Amino acid sequence: MNALVLATELAKRPVVTLGGEAVAQIKDTVFDSPAGRIAGFTLSGRGLLAGPLKQSLPWSSVHALGRQAVMIPGREALAAAGVVVASGEAAQGDVLGVRVVTDAGAEAGTVLDVVVERGGRIAGFRIAAAEPLDPRRRSVFVPREEVLAVSGQALVIPAAPRHLVADELPSFTTQVEMYLARQAAPRPGAVREGGERTW
Image 1: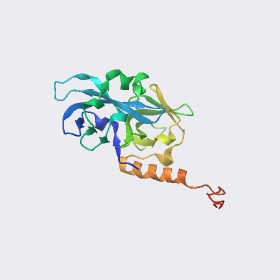
Image 2: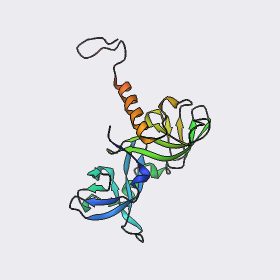
Image 3: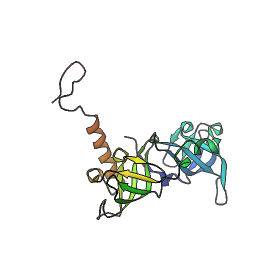
Image 4: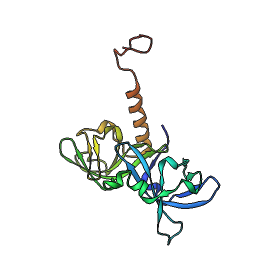
């Protein structure tokens, strides 16, 4: 799995060309929830007094998401502001701060952050946990695979997702890797390539 990063940590990260020119900084991350990916970023100028730019950065134009900067091939990678905003979750409302409810109708908390892989895939959500979800933890991580639905109004999770809940990012990373490995493993009785049966 790619290294994981919180979407809020991307805010104010510089956008730098491969030639070393700093052209902007990240303002907001825009999500395409149905696709489970980052759609792109809205941008602001560099510096304390700089405001929003009339340009955005589609994810398809990102060369690399590094620890210190977002790398792009050149200035030509930037697009009109509406290109990214109209394509993702921002068109329906921001996912940060939305209610989290269980499929049984119980309030489970609110979304604090989105966990993304460096390849742009949404890996999960950091949630301010209400007591029905986990009375021992103030915030928890829930993998995207456990989420039943997400929109600008609510995120719906199973009533009992605790077998995949973690309270800090490193253990969340490990749990998601184990979950994905279990999902990829052949089920007992399945037929492998070549006709061999697994048990």
